Structure formats: C-alpha cells, structure tokens
Amino acid sequence: MIEPVYSPSANRYDTMEYRRSGRSGVKIPVLALGLWHNFGSHKPFQDVKAMAHYAFDKGICHFDLANNYGPEYGTAEENFGRLMECSFRPYRDELLVSTKAGWDMWPGPYGNWGSRKYLMASLDQSLKRMKLDYVDVFYSHRWDPETPLEETMQALVDIVRQGKALYVGLSRYPLEQARKAYAYLAAHDVPCLLYQDRYNIIDRVPQYKGLIDQSVEDGVGFISFSPLQQGLLTGRYLNGVPADSRMAKGVFLKEDMLTPAMMNALNGLNDLAARRGQSLAQMALSWLLNDSRVTSVIIGASSVAQLEDNLQCLGASPFSPEELGLIEQLSAPIQLTNSKN
Ligand SMILES: NC(=O)c1ccc[n+]([C@@H]2O[C@H](COP(=O)([O-])OP(=O)(O)OC[C@H]3O[C@@H](n4cnc5c(N)ncnc54)[C@H](OP(=O)(O)O)[C@@H]3O)[C@@H](O)[C@H]2O)c1
Image (tube, rainbow, N blue to C red; front, side, top):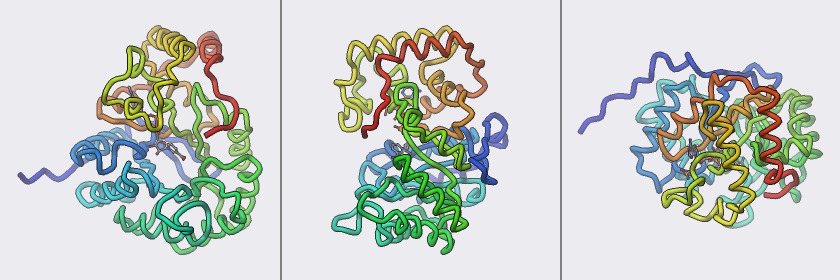
C-alpha cells in the first residue's frame, strides 16, 4: 500500500507557547519531545511516526535525541532519519533537533565521556543516522572529570565552526563546571544555548544546587527532562504496575519506588489535579511551566494518547498560592534535593 505523503496541520503553531532560550535569538516550544525510550528499534516504526507527526502537528517542533537513545543504541536516531526521509525533510527549517554525546556509545576508550576524539566522531555518526547535515543543538551529555573542561568546550566550539551544529548545550554538569563552561563558550563566541537537567515536582536537585538560577544569570535556557519523573507523576502507577509500563521493564524505573510515602503523595497530588480539572501529568507539567526560569520541558511518551493528555497542560488555569503550597506539602516527603543519578 502506498502511504499518503505527510502533510502537517496548518494550525500547528496556534496553541503552542514558545519561550526565548536564555539571551539567545531562539524560541523553543515549552513542550519538546524526547526520544530516549519508545522511538528505537523495539517500537514499530508506525508508532514512532504517529507520535512524531502528532507532536509536530501540535507545534512541538523541538525533538531531543542522544547518540545512545533506543533502547538499542543509535536506533532512535536511525528512526529519526527515517522520519526525515518519509515526512520531515520539507520542514527541516521548522525543526529544532538536538543530540548529545557523553555516555557510553561504543567500546574502547573513544566511545564515552568528554574527549574531543569522542564528541567529534559521535556527532558525525549521529548526523549520518539522522540523515541531517547539521543539528540545531549539540550537547555535552555529562561532565567528564578526567578530561580538561577546555578540551570538551573547544570541541563544542569547533563543531559549531564546522557547521555541524548551530548551538551547543550542556547536560547534568555540576554548578562549578557549568559556570566555567558558560564562560569558556561565551569567550569563544559560542554562547551556551541550553542547560538540560532533571527537574520536576519530585526531583528538585537543580534548584537546590543553584543550577537553574545560574543558567538564568548566564543567559542560558533551562530545559527540564523527565518532567513526569519517568511516569511516576501521572496516573500510570496509582493502581498497580501496568504490564506495558516503563516500571514493568524495571531498568530505569524500579517498582521499589512505590513506597507508602510515594503512593500517599501521588494520590494527594492526583486529587489536587482533579480539583483543578487536570490529570496528574498535566498538573506536573503546568507546575514546571509556571516557573518563568524554565524555558521548556522534554516529555517522553509511549503513545499518541499520552501526548494528547500532556498537551492539555497548555492554557491551564494559574496556580493559586494555596495550590502551590499544597503541592509543596504533599511532595515534601518524597522530594529529592540532593545529588544522585
Ligand atoms: N540529558 C539527560 O541526561 C536525559 C536523561 C533522561 C531523559 N532525557 C530527555 O528527556 C526526555 C523525556 O524523559 P522521560 O521519558 O523520562 O520523560 P517523562 O515525561 O518524565 O516520562 C515519560 C514516560 O511517562 C509515561 N507517561 C507520559 N505521559 C503520560 C501520561 N499522560 N499518562 C500516563 N503515563 C504517561 C510514559 O511511560 P510508559 O512508557 O510507562 O507509558 C512515558 O514513556 C527523554 O526522551 C530525553 O530526550 C535527557
């Protein structure tokens, strides 16, 4: 059967909000789509395509990848390359595509961490897989304590000079190293566009570590990943662990997280969300977007229905001080405030 050519919705920019990233010229949709899970070789390409098309049709023009997203390493990028070929090529200039290197990708000393050798080779591979000439944002995925910071940053600068990325970003750097990296990049005329870290109602570490305020001070956009704490901050686990859920796979989200304190907090938050006329997922996203220091949040999804649910966080009624206080009170027993991975 010949499939019809993809034609995006004519209204795709009507309902999404776009926020300027730091002091740059670039605006980013407040919801971005992350391809960490559910977009690799384990997912039928029809599903990948349906989610990506749905997202773009709703104004989600920022797609966040990394070299090792899959689960089979590289396969999320490969599927993104297929999307470029079958649907997105005519819309390349409407897309903001990011990828990263910094975690394990291939064996040996040059397939991990932050050397120039790894970053340069990894981006070349990513571009081939994604069938792109350049990415919009290339991230150093994590700070490497054994590589001089200057080497990693100069690799990012040179990648931009080579035209392989338009902007650069950092993910999960400690505060001191982030500060030095911002200074290095700015001094070399490649100001950091985005700082990416996990931040949500449960995980407050970047707030406590001063990373959010530092990004604002340095004119760097702050983009939150795992805004739903991988699905915990949704209705997914309120009545057990569904067989098709991320927790059932047991790799990145473990069942022992569902402690009585966690369930108590999630149920309380779910009730509050219902009183606001929202799902728990929508309220968790609205809570993040209520913070003007947050440029954007990268959501994951395993179905179009989840994306549909999450998109309804846009245009939510503002939080009253009482509601914000209640969120603090309910989440206090489960909040993470200290560094861990
Ligand atoms: N820089 C980094 O180091 C780093 C690390 C992690 C992630 N990221 C980025 O952040 C992106 C998002 O991370 P994430 O996938 O952990 O985000 P998330 O939005 O916190 O979690 C997504 C998961 O939550 C569940 N979910 C989402 N919406 C739902 C809804 N409305 N109702 C019920 N369940 C729902 C789904 O789980 P099920 O699969 O169970 O359905 C989905 O796969 C990644 O794709 C990646 O781009 C970056």
